Length: 605
Image (tube, rainbow, N blue to C red; front, side):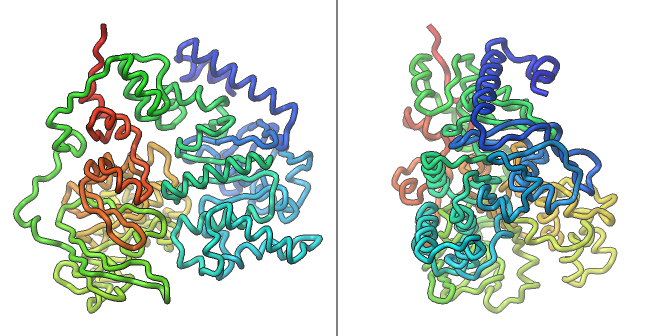
């Protein structure tokens, strides 16, 4: 498959030097792993029972002990399916047509039942909440150890639990209820429940999707330690932050491995990344336009290249006033000075745990607000307070003149809509039409009005109205389900739309479509509150940021102001975009590739 694409596909258009690099990486990496393999996959194909075509097609690769391999590819390319096959979930528990072989330590995943393979292969799902079963953190880790055969001693159980919690940074949370933890904390908990079994192969499906910058840095440290212990790791990701420490990269496209090699060979060739459905590094794109070779893949390399180019920074007014970044956004009218939402001295606690502490701010009509902060800083709790799902322990929230403490949920839903981080926690109906129509029915709308609202809501998110009465939402990809969740909220015609991590688990194309839709809703008059860990999205789309830390609001400003303050960055453990770090060398904080291209000029001799 690699050779076919190399000769006749998009890879054939690459420079010969690139093809030599790819060939070398592909052949060298493959030959090494064939000699000493922990996992061997040969000719693996799989088609789901309800599917019309194979999801995996003749996949062959191997993993060596202690190797860290990152699996990349568009959504729907087969990454999660391949993960499920590694520990026998496919074909044992998932019906479909399976062919080929997959062996771990010489044992076929087809021959051994799943429970027997759990000690060799640990798997963390992309939808990690489905793996939680206990009411306490330590109970979650004890559960898989209860079924060991032969049983472990109490001292060994205690050692494993303490070690696993320490590995993922939850040592102080042993007695907490997982449901009171943030999404990122729960994701790390699931990882600990797998690590406590001490598998030789750890398979992670999008492990960094819900982690804040500090959590991602901690995950990278965990991965380094696992490698030192000789544990093999296979992980899928859309985040390029893990490629630097990977030994190898596999790229899946339409169920086939279309590229394999060293991370550097991929990162230094942005066109190859685009061909594979991946997002090139922002700085690499900038230097690509200037014809620089080799292209930089880090801020430090970019600084060195910039000095060689005698690069000069000339920030035009369009950059400084955000016209280039935000486009032609609606001008603020006098009415926009009036607050749509007032948050006044709000505190909130779950039993004896304080989550928010004396938070105050306002939101104006037409705002595009990014809510930032570490996992557990109170962002999602604040979102649920804004739409009335929760009530403040102290203080008050006023939405369009209504106190959320005394206003019905039905009334608040007409003003503030909330789209959950995981659309599958929000979608429940059998058809797309029923899902989007539900909120309008609940509000008492007539049949004709319901039909109008369903049609306009689906149109707003770019989904067809025709056929929606027969379409099962769970037959669609996550990006499409995310749009359905947004449409179901838009059917109430809210003034404010809160989106919690709207691009989690989406590939670059899906992310761009989702954010273009959200920006369009903002341009049409909706006030947007976006919770995200992606500073790239904040830099590209947000007009304003609220920065949370340990339940308190520590900053309120534009993305440029927040990114330019080193003290805030350190306090909130943020990772500002490489573009911003690069430009700060010249005393300016630029936010996007477009701003750098408009502001920087190489001075050639």
